[in-house]
Image 1 (cartoon, rainbow, N blue to C red):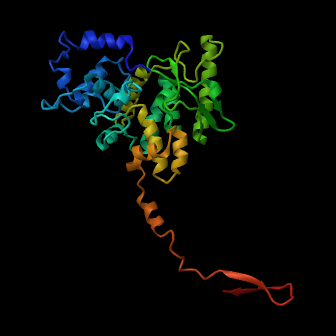
Image 2 (image 1 turned 45 degrees about the vertical axis):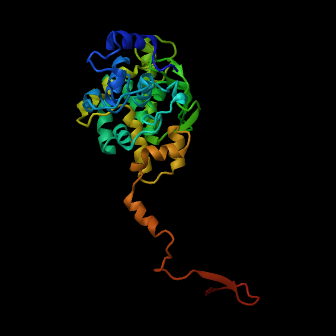
Image 3 (image 1 turned 90 degrees about the horizontal axis):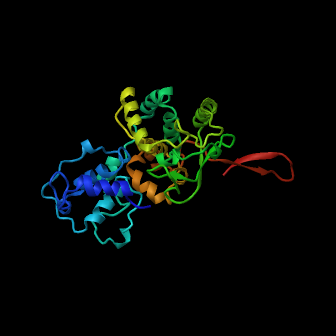
Amino acid sequence: MAPFDAFTEKRLDESRLGPQGRPTGGVGVRSAGPCVSRRLIAGVGHAGQASSARHLEDEEPLDEHDPPVPRDAERLLAHAVLERIADENPIVHLSKAKGVQIGKLTKHERDEQIRPFESPEQLDRFLAVALQPSYAPYGRAWEVMARCGLRPSEAYALKPGDLDLTAKTVRVERALDLDRSVKATKTHETRTVRLSATAVESLKKHLTWLKTETLRRGWGEPQWLFPDEQNEPLRADTGQKSFRRACRQAGVTEHTPYDCRHSYVSWMLQPGAPLGYVNKQIGHRNPTTTLTLYADWVKNDALDARLADLLEPDLGTKPPKRAITAGFSDNLTAVSD
């Protein structure tokens, strides 16, 4: 997809940049560091569409000694991908700059963006607020993200026919773009995600709500599993704001919808869930990607301690006994080796 639509380009040209191609704050794009690049990109995107875990008010202050940027457009587009405002950089294959490598975040950037809830109990406290009628249907969508590891763009794009509650699965074959148009998933693949028992029961309640809402509004048939009041897909920017409000109401640290997915992956890997299974659930192309992003969350000291003795003999038990026949008798005599 194109990294910016016409609306965004217009704002970039007219609102954020002056006649000499300088941001309104007086800092030239060529001399702007990553922090300013991100601010600029987030400023020209549609409000609330950036799904980065970091918010603009938390950005580091501008360092006036930031080095010059020889490829302004390339740098801006690269940071657009890092901030999840754009899905891909159309000139990435022409890039030779080592400072910005798409898909290869620094450890600091990875730690900043991957922020799961502190504990399952904290998530439950959040969901107790998010599943109230005032947040419907966003609350159910967020719960699906947290219990199945879906990306927000995938959860918002689900349709009722994607569910198979008998088999306890959901088919993920599409995603939503920033303008709510349908696109392929990030890996351009369809996958089948297994649902937990809790997720199945929650979705049964949601389908009851959806049926009631469809009749009340006279839709005929719901087009989406999580529709808005016009039977259209949910808006990501509205969901972003509502999510923060629900966090404050629940008294938990402020998070973003994407952190539901991060929580799922982290809590699955910590107790030792097979990496291959988690990788299939969340839709990464290969387990290496999952391990690279979530390496810090795979640590489990208790499991490591048990694995250290995995090949040790069990010295506290007697040797196994072998049953043999004595002569031609049918009776068996137990003899130790």
